[in-house]
Image 1: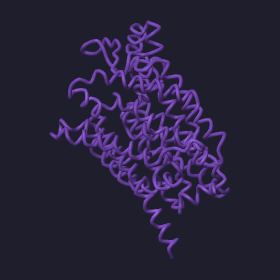
Image 2: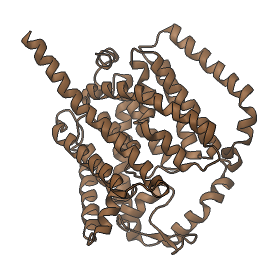
Image 3: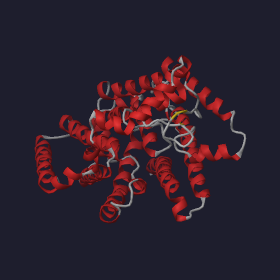
Length: 416
């Protein structure tokens, strides 16, 4: 009796800690949405800053309570140490300029400034075990219903009202749909898989309609990766594979018959994917960057987290961001930041794919690798739930506790 009570108490404590991370992801989603609509709706700015402070404080608190264990985590090798040291230097250098309240507001309110470069330092040394991901999929499977309902509303009433606010509105309850899609087959409630597939199918349609090439490609890759993981999974029996093949076939036929007129006129296909299309939307931006970024010291060390680069189409001829993850990171931290970061990500992805025994690790590795690909199209460091999940995936792939469990152990943990 005493042992049972103790186990229940321990389980409850674990859920309290894991629940905190759900609140973190939701707070970041609402923070992004508030940043877009605060002026339109007359919302007090204080709400935005409170959400930002809560998310940051909770991420730090969770790290303190769930520190990674050196024997389980590969986070103490030279490349990661170099990355950590250079990140601390960039953060310290930027903080020397914080001489009034405006800078504090920028830190807490601007999603691409300062905090995205602090997140990896905290999350890399946080422990995420099987129980964390078990609770994550349980909550994500409930919240995705709200996201689907918002998607349906957007398709019915918001298709002609711009794209940024509707897309962020849909993302309010999306705490990591990509990861959830990839691991939903590990959850015993089979309808959960269908919910996430439905969410991604609608998302692909919306991204095509709004002309969001990066998000469109990323979503397609997620669906393809989901199929690949399930077809190779030891948990997928022959009957389930046949159902999966047949479902894919029916979906393709459905899209061809019913959505051909829509797809043919979708904004994303009007914009195109070819070299000329990229040149039209990004050509001047890249030309300005390479024209201005000519010194060796710029390429090696970057221009700091508050650095600017030439942008002839901007009001003051300068900008702090490039619509490309690789170039933005070089602008901020140079190759000294970019190269270690890419090594960390690709190594984590390699370990998740080839040095693991379960589908969860492969799903985490996929999240990291697809983010790497998305950096070519956008994929900026971002104070968002998406970027947090990417680094959670990196930290988990570096953990032997997560990687060495077999599929049966993961399945039991997911459904305990």
